[in-house]
Image (tube, rainbow, N blue to C red; front, top):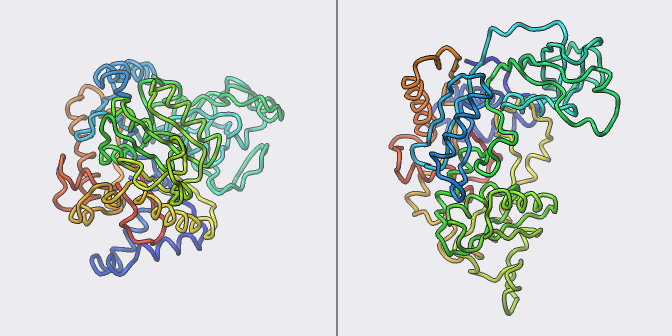
Length: 451
């Protein structure tokens, strides 16, 4: 059931997205009224957290079962002994799913409150505590140790340092203040730690801050699916064209058993450093990361390869993964996006330019990530509007572990099957292919939706 307002967008953005969603094919198949209903449902879903937190196991260092056992112990500590089920994805054996519990509707709102920015609020809904830089407003007499109600300023109207805010805000839950109001707004740049420790979040989601960092990688489900469809093999040479922060890069190396060569490119230097840090943390030695513009990765007039560094000659790689830059508006939860139409549409030319580079570097046959024409026809945008928002409460987890697991598995199956349409079954090519490539999709509005 929906408890938050739909995502807040500029009017021109909502109009632009609606025009792309309400295309002739959709309206013809559903009718105008049903298509409009689904679009509104989609906007509403985007402001809510996904049903699951998904993490990928680094199988290069440990087995899935071993990491699952370690994670069970960790979650019991986080949730004060509550036994939260951890499910192994039915098709992606290195992916674990943890249910997001909520919304919890019986949390009492406190007199003292703090207001955080929209991005900070999104992070809280995914299990994070409130860090000092995210706090925009705090009650006048708030001191360390106070029980505080936390709200998200979804429209960005609250002034930094305000003592109260009566504008549009969304309740996120309660927490204990680690600092006083005076300390939070002292202006000291070194204050970057936890400002409010969430004790009663409206959505209970595990925190993965420094949790089994060498064994687990927090990764959205579509992101993990893509690498499995790429199907990297030991000994191959593979290019990740727009690689930061390295989730898919490290996944490729792990599936290759760290045997072969994985080249990762990104044009922003600090993001390349993040790729290197993740590779080191996960114990992967086959990754080489370069600060380089992916649109210039193909060099046709070179006599020989530049010693393994970009740019590259045609057909230099066995496989190529391209996750082209996008607006990221589909990341959930997302209560507000202040982007202009110019900003949202700026990605399309870059995406098309990257698509012209990728097939040539990878060689003939790589355009559809190795999928047949029939398989390519099965690719569709993931549409969460057809999946109902379901409440998962704490009571349903007590003493009924098997039934809860069956319920959660049914939600997983429903999400994937409805996103793919009729005929989607576990293990099928259709199931494996969803959300793999954007090259074959119409160049209509940018739409990168995750679970």
